[in-house]
Structures are given as C-alpha cells and as structure tokens.
Length: 382
Image 1 (cartoon, rainbow, N blue to C red):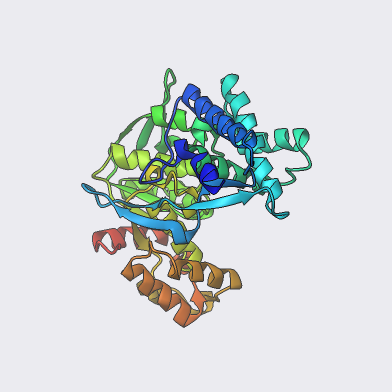
Image 2 (tube, rainbow, N blue to C red):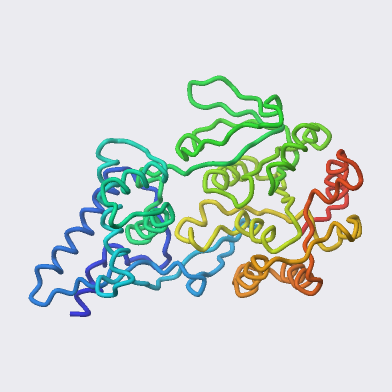
C-alpha cells in the first residue's frame, strides 16, 4: 500500500534536483490530468491509500545553496525530500482539499487562456468554496503547494504576480508594439513594474548606466529619483517597497542577464529585516525554492552596514524589535548566509540596535546621493 502511494506521483519525482519548469498551457494541463489519474488509480485500488499527498518540502532544512559554474550568482534550491498534506489529520485535511480546488481552478484558467492575479483567484475561490478558503494567505500557500506538486512555475499555471515594484533612472523600456518609455523621465513615481512575467520577459531594454541600485524603501527611492541621483551616478534605481515581490525580482534578474557588467548594489536598513531583503534578492527565498534560480542575482551589500553607524547620531538608533530577533534567528540558521553577512548580523545582535537609511538625513536631505557615490568610489560593498 505504501509503495503504491509513493509511486503515484512518480511522474513528478523523477528529477535529481527539484525545480519548477516554465511550461506552455497544454503541458501544464497534462500534468494536472496525470495527477488526477494517479489519484483515481489509488482510489480504485483494493486498499485505497488516499490519505497523503506528497509535495516537495519547502522548509529551510530541505534547502541548499548552489553556486553558478560560470557566474558569481548563487541561489537556493530544494533537494528531493517530501512533506505531506494529509486527509486523515483534522488540521491538514482542508489543506489537502485546497490543493485539488486550486488545481481545478488553474485548469479552467488555462483552458480559457486567461491570466489572473492571486487576489482575483482568492475571490473566485472564496465564492466557489467558502468552506475551504477564508483568507488570501491560504490561497498563496496552496498555490505554492500546487507548484511543489506539479513542478511548474506559478506563471505557467496562469497566475500573475502582483507587483509593487518601481524603476527609475537610465534605462529605456519598450513593450511589444508600444512606445519607448524613458525611466529617467518618469519622475519620483518611477516606472511601475508589471506583474505579467511574460510581458517583462518580452521587454526590450537599453541603458548607459554603470550601476543598478536596489533600494529597500519606497520613500528613499522617491528621494533619490526626485534628486536625479541616477544622473550624478549613472544608474538604474529599483525598489519593491520592502520585501521583494516576484515580478520585481524577475525584472532585476532579467536586467542582470541583459547587462552582466553592471554591479547590482543594495541599499537597505541596518537591521535583520534589511539583511533578509538583501538575501532574498541575492539567493531567492525558501518558499519559492522551486523557482529561486529564476530570480537570483549577484547583489552586493552597499549599505547601511556597521561601518556606516559612525555617520548616524546615537539618538537615531533604535532598539531591535521582537520581530527583528525572530528574523535574525532564521538568518543564523540559514544555509545562505555568507561569513561577512554573519559578522554584520552578530554586530546587530551584540549592539541590540537598528538603524534606518533615513537617519543619514541628519547630514541634509541631499546627502544620500553623496553617501552612495562615496561608497561606490571606495568599492565599499560586500
């Protein structure tokens, strides 16, 4: 019985390294159909074993860091280990059913040749299956379960990434059959990054920049764009307004491939959350482990770092919050954290303090550009 259950998903477990494929709709539909047929096969057996649905384990204990052979890019990937959604455990039975509900919905989306956002999918499921879907988080997690089961990307399922990201500076974008957009002329609001990964993949891009600067915070991005820092330092500015969404990460990865000679420098707060954001851009995230390689970039840490605290008044430093300590604990146990990053994290924990980028305004509202320029000239990034 156990062998039958394990073999039921053989179609999805025959790869040594686990990653999500980018597939055309007809192939995704075929994988969904195979999953259903395998389930029915088990259901019709003399001793049905339908209690467990094996999914690729997305916990940190199943993650590894893989080094690029010809580049400096490293990324997270998941090894061949399963977790389960059980129909027989009360606290997991609904999660088991949600997987099939989302797969059914994705099959319909692909048949209709549509693409939907996670939010649209949530309201559709909320109306169709209110007993199983009561929050956006449940839908988001179930989408990742389906990716882990079918081993295909979210975009291949017809699910579009919601985007918060913005770009400003010395880059030209042209969508198919559209006019060229000059991101240096978009003002402090910047160019809004589309959530449609296919559209982002089709963008024609041109630049004369020398750097790509990833900014953690929207307000800091606006200040740099309004001051036209990208003209003082020939650069492209990018922000996801905090923790990076998939579309912003995808576009940054595309730019890194299109312009491989441009250093990517990150400006984040000096706290565990800022470091976690940097690491997400750099390695990908464990939750997206099956697709992490598609978004990883060789991002360098420009600031804020421990050496920069001498520029910040003592009264601008704030104590670490409980959430900071929780994030730090996760980072310390992570396989991705390189030694110099661990040293910075240890300094944060030892000091018990956190510093925000805006503390540099003590030197004037135009100081950020000078700060970045000085760090670049000194090649002070790690």
